[in-house]
Length: 275
Image (tube, rainbow, N blue to C red; front, side, top):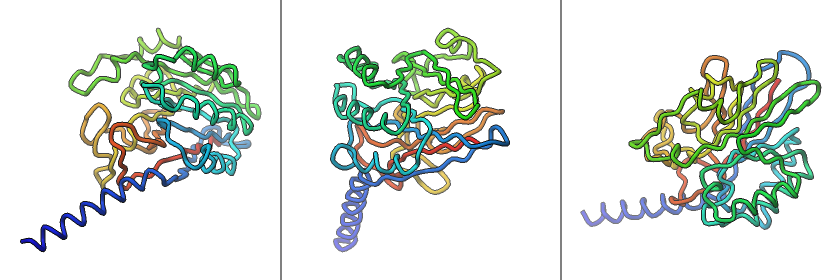
């Protein structure tokens, strides 16, 4: 019995060490999506949930991996900082570096909107050249492709635990963003993926989301174990999802917050190729 206990204890310790060290891993996941059928592709890099983490001094490893992808645009889908204000300076520095590569679009998550320094942070982002999308939109033309980028900012009540879930519908989406335009490719940055059905009904062609951190741990067949709402085995944990003609890329995110462990769930840079 004592020998079994020691073996179990050692395995648990090794697993915890692995979970902690996994925070420093950095994977690049590619999502090829057929959208237009011909012409040159449009490449998007999506980042989310950095939470003030750093990959090398000044996030050098993160920046270098993004540079190698040569994206047309970079989209930040929220929670690049922490609600107590941690990570604002490093996020601003990262954005300035990324703007040397291509335009950067940023929509808030539930952590940014709770920061006491929110307004100052947003002002500094805008000064740097970041396109800040707080229930706002921006029109782009990339190689003759008309893309309308929307950034959704949900109220804090829409991030509550699953047993306090707030009603949400596509009509409410129109109050935030107005109607989706059918003549454009509608790209929606929406931090919380739980409302993919409502995003699809509103008219999003592609949704970029984060928030779930891949479910903290990932198990074969079962996927992510738990969402920030404490929903076990959430329907949307990580990867590519589709409803009708709408698709959602849900990143595992870059950092962690309350639970600083990752199991079989490396931090992710998402690269979306629209062709």
